[in-house]
Image 1 (cartoon, rainbow over the protein chains, first blue to last red):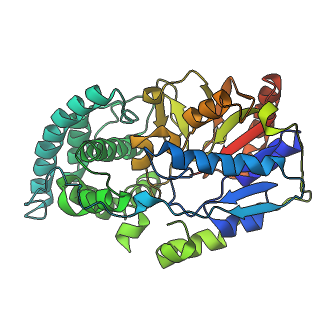
Image 2 (image 1 turned 45 degrees about the horizontal axis):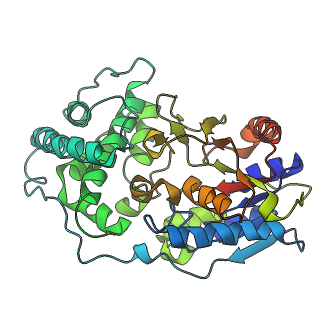
Length: 240
Length: 153
């Protein structure tokens, strides 16, 4: 991001670059950068908190009026209140037999669970008028089936001629995770991302299935598949 | 949460030791008062308007996001799985604060909001992005943009 700012500034356009990793910003030395103590993925802080977000945006834009750079790195003073868990939030469900039996059994459980989530997801997405599901072009049920085929050791054809099969798997996993999160966000309370992730990875067949896919294809002879399995299915924090 | 001390040690080490580009110059451009500026967002979240090609891997090019884009049209195709997406799912302003910019323009804090915003894939080698970044600069200038809010994830 700081590199982009460098190029734009060289072309004559003033920039201010949000900083999430202070050490990287110190290395790249952008003209102006407010460092924010928020988690990766939330450069403007808590969702559904316009007043807080506006403070962040204004703090960033105010650096454009300063004349004492380069380099300006300023720390934003407030933590994200949504980083704290919310006791009011309830997980939508837990699949108790997700760890039982074989990979084939897990594949069947995933198909059943994802079809059930699809029904809730469809209703919620319609009510909200918004979803980020859609990278793979598959419905949630179809994404579950596609992942289940990989779990069964088949190498299914890509459902989309523009995507290789390994990339289709990655997008199917992304879509499935997104649908589960949207269902989990629809309940009461304002969960932290950690609460949502704990639920996905520890209480659903989808989480168990994604872990299993990672294990299965981490040693694949197909370099693309191996890379997808190792780097793009399970977050690093969940495999350490 | 993005303090390195809050991250798992291996991830923190990767971020701290990530090779960053070094530049011979440190450009610095000033402009008019904020209340007269036209502001654009340039994101590196791999954002893409629904119906357009998602970013694949480490594509170096960019996607155009017209200012009239609605939240339900904006997708998130960043390659990294080590960052939160649920905040964006709940409220796009967490990553793409277009509603906040509109409010600031209405309040007279900034002059106006650009007609077009842009997104890159942040995990891409910056050297590969340079030509595209300069292309975006030309497009921004043609829209009279004189302030860019760079939004990484």
